[in-house]
Image 1: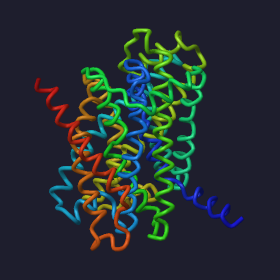
Image 2: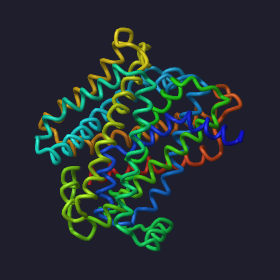
Image 3: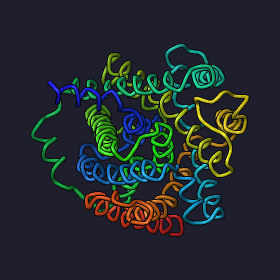
Image 4: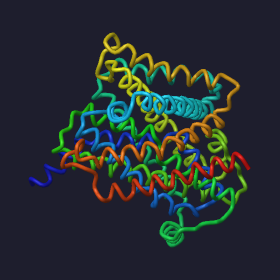
Length: 407
């Protein structure tokens, strides 16, 4: 009975890891996974298994640092490196986040347009008002519960894939045996998958949330369990999105590059029920990811300049924090109203994220293994191995992306 109560208490304390995992499957990520399934079928399912320990290692390292030092990732950069370094990294993060926010907003608005017939542009402001209301007028605990609840809705993609009645033996083969096809389309899809799965904003968000929760070193195991659960859930959802797209779109020669195109393509091929599940997932994903993206920017800038911050603070006492948060939403709207393509914006934001990733992973690994900083709670062997793997692969991704741009 004691063990049951202990497990129940641990689950009750879930939050940062679960929310971060849910936010990773934002609408921009969903369209990436949908495109992968539509263009390569089931051939890249093994990459979801491969990337899961990488995600866990990076996010758990970040959580450990935040708990032991009591600092966010912005403060770690500023304290253990230089403010100039922190400013450059956070500036790049902010730009990438803004483009991703714009793409996510457009995706949610497009679903509302398909359902209601009202043009997507008219949904942008109501979406922002709802998110702003939740964050400004509700308590941090309410915001946290809302985000955790929304992550559960993403399970609709699991049901959507099951409805397709996939062949189990084919799934097992493609999940456990790497299938590498040396073509530009296949490799670029692989880069998109890995770049979408491990995003810098996730590191900033989770570190800040662990700090806000005021966890002690005694709770490191709880934080690890939360992180493992969040990252596995995130990739399980992504795994089933690829399956659903493979069975509904692959082989039909349907090209999709936006959420609207994917939703419209799914309806006649897979039916209204699959379309409904897809749409519900997009809306839930948007309302998780947009505040997390804007929040990670607001926390990062507030920590850089030493401002008061946090959703538990009143607007009057944390003006700078809320200006950045609401400003991020507003700029997202402006990008959508401008001639800039949300698809192109997402592409360039992923390039920025890719350029940030190896640097951030290296910084995290160095700090997490510094005994002067971490004491007896330095990084685990598992985290070190897969942080190194992430560093090498992300560096390779940058080289290949730059090569593709030059050639």
